[in-house]
Amino acid sequence: MKLTIPQLKRQIQNNEISNLYLFYGEEKYLLNNYIANIKDKTVNGFLEFNYFEYTDETADYEQFASFVLSYPQMSDKKMVVLKNCGFLQNSEYKDSLTKLLSDLPSYAVVVFAEDGIGKAKKELLALIEQKGVVTEFEKQSPENLRAWVNRKFALSNKKMTIEDMNYLVSLCGCSLDKLEIECSKLIAGTEEEVISKNHIDALVTVPVEYKVFAMADCLLNKNANEAYSLLREFKINKEQPTEILAIIYSSISEVLMFKTLMGQGKNPELYLAPNRKWLAKKYRVQAPKQDGKKLREVMKMCYSYDEKIKTGMIDGYTALEAVIASML
Image (cartoon, rainbow, N blue to C red; front, side, top):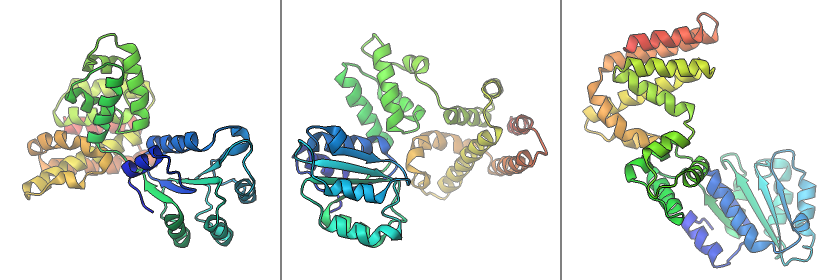
């Protein structure tokens, strides 16, 4: 059966553990948490004999099948997790895997964890859905992440304003993995009950991508001092100019999209990727102020300089300086 994450949570809480699971999607933090929850409910002793993980395509199919068919040791159940092992995609294993999964021993719990299922054999997907549980772990929305942060802080008697939570979520690139780390740092490093933006700026590691977005914002707002300050920081840290150009290009193209669609009375936020919707508010304010022709010219410049950097025709930071000068 196909279950949403809340449905899966209720099932596990009720000790209704299936013999077979297929988890897939981008949100690895939640995916791995649910695997851990199933493990806690399943294996009650001798982990070295009753729990095993295969983590890449070098996994041995015969070893996996032998593990599933052998009885658990001093435990009612045993569990095996296969992370991107390729068994579901490889025609070589389709028949034997179909036979194994069709009649799993009652003591065995098998979990497939995949980045995506686009290349998996349809017959195997249908079989897992019939015999077990299939759940997709999509990237969480900024609203869900903000709620998660709020709960995390509340458990430690900490608070944060909605605005600052949005700022924290955006800094972490809408990643639960990074939010978990940074929230723990903020809780441990803040004596006050209310965690503020000042605490975030002092303690949270800012990713390069966010700094490039900030640079694009400075350029669009004609803030030369801040833009050149960020450029110096990128040079010192030896960041790749082509990656910076690509993010500037992406940011400007999305501002142009907002300008165009807002002018047509459409909602441009619908066209943003889920992990970039936190930028919508910024783009809505920025887009009407910009000249569409100028934005297109800068995009062409970014593309042209990217080609020239890669072919050795120009130094990367010389190209970046030219783009910055043209926007200011």
